[in-house]
Amino acid sequence: MGNFADRLVGAVRQRGTPVLVGLDPRFDALPESIRRTAENGGRAAQAHAFRVFCCGVVDAVHTLVGCVKPQAAFFEELGPPGMEALAEVIVHAREKGLQVVLDGKRNDIGSTASAYANGFLGADASPWRADAITVSPYLGGDSLEPFVDVARQRGAGVFVLVKTSNPGGGMFQDLVADGRPLYRHVGAYVEQLASQTSGDCGYGAVGAVVGATYPEQLAELRAEMPHTWFLVPGYGSQGATARDVAPAFDVNGTGAIVNNSRGIIFAYARHPYAERFGQAGWQEAIEAAARDMIEELRAETPAGRLTGRGAG
Amino acid sequence: MGNFADRLVGAVRQRGTPVLVGLDPRFDALPESIRRTAENGGRAAQAHAFRVFCCGVVDAVHTLVGCVKPQAAFFEELGPPGMEALAEVIVHAREKGLQVVLDGKRNDIGSTASAYANGFLGADASPWRADAITVSPYLGGDSLEPFVDVARQRGAGVFVLVKTSNPGGGMFQDLVADGRPLYRHVGAYVEQLASQTSGDCGYGAVGAVVGATYPEQLAELRAEMPHTWFLVPGYGSQGATARDVAPAFDVNGTGAIVNNSRGIIFAYARHPYAERFGQAGWQEAIEAAARDMIEELRAETPAGRLTGRGAG
Image 1: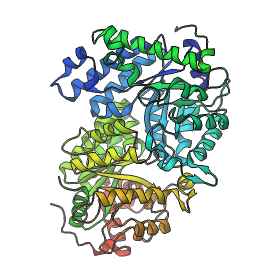
Image 2 (image 1 turned 45 degrees about the vertical axis):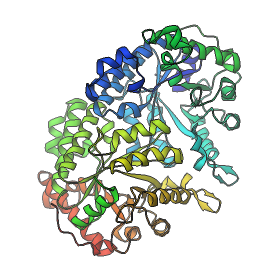
Image 3 (image 1 turned 135 degrees about the vertical axis):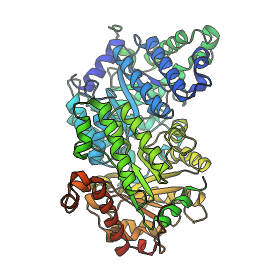
Image 4 (image 1 turned 90 degrees about the horizontal axis):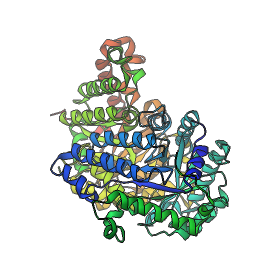
């Protein structure tokens, strides 16, 4: 168990990379061989296809990267059978030694927030078995505390949305109050929670979601939030480059995990992987795309200072 | 199908009350007879107990009130079996003619938000079959639009968090930018979405969550958001009274639904219902508590102007 940030540092150092593979299954994008088994099969068959695909992605990348991020929405879209598949994917990823961040962007107040935290956090104690979950801060500090309490008890982690990667993210997040934008108010509170939950590595069990699509704000927040591990979306499909994510790291190459979902898991459908591997080689394509992203981050960011020993 | 707000007005007028019964099952609070069947039975047995209890609540209140609000968190806390129970509760409530607002406070960006919307919204088109869902606005307008698009296509509704009922809700919601607090910025955007989706009744398919625990802000937002139906939490257990929620309504007694969860569904455990009905009469206690809340709102708010014709 132990502190989540310490486990995360360990996973990142062992693999020598901060790459986080996002598990965002979409039925129409699945490899033909998997899609075919579920066509005309209804939601249960599609959920089974999601399970087969996501476990296949995990098998392709688990020796290369230290963590994965299943996106709850795509599983929930299929109803209860999708949620069964999600649980199975999480268990499989953990059995392969990965840290699992469930991207659910949940939140609520008081005892309801506790119910989410109890349900999702703690690989040994919860039904969903995630190592960490993403949460939304709109409801304020007393909605985040129940997550922090459960995370602390169970050695789990919480990533709070601070500055999101979408084009419209600034509509409310950039509103300026008392001389600084909302996202910096949220960031300051998250940093406080992080410093109260920090492990041996100096980072806390509470982290922040900070988009790579706003590199200046990323640098600003990195300076203001020294105890806060960043989960950085926006790389690849959303337009951010390795250079854009460089400010997310500390000088040792730790302090951030960088998500890539479609760019890795659907690599078999795009240049140059499609030509090299074809649909039949979908797992090799995924592995190659993960290796390429690892190299990009090594070349352009402080993550190049990580010296991985490889998995297991 | 039709516009969600028109259906909601219909449901409220038919029953003659804006009471919304929150389905927040907690194992330790269930009636003894139900709890006993699931003790030492693990999560699947608890989920079955939730299903039996929530369907029993629906049976007790469906002729009195027009809508229910299952809280996703309590079902998710039990893992996949809990999510199966949630789906069954929603179907049962709809079969009894109720409008179902799923309290999930979901959100995400772009196509991920669409996945949540596709999964939850539209009783005839989605696996979860909810009439409406609650969503969080932190991610900005482009995260809300996919919900609005799907809601429009499917005759469903979306309630956006604006001013929440919890004590710490103001931590970020009350920050003042450009001369007004964040919640009014969010409220102004929600009102715009509501006016773009309004039905024959004048209200939109997009509504707002506005807590009864802040009656002044409730009055202020009611004036600023004439097309926006309010979902009002905070009544009862959280301390708000019938008088506090009065500003949520328009002059006809429509424009708001007022939630009560614990105060109704666990009435059998508290004075005076416990003495009158005991655990064995838990459904009668729930029915009596619902009738009492209906009367309180009739006496103290414009909801007294509704003249219900009764269910069916």
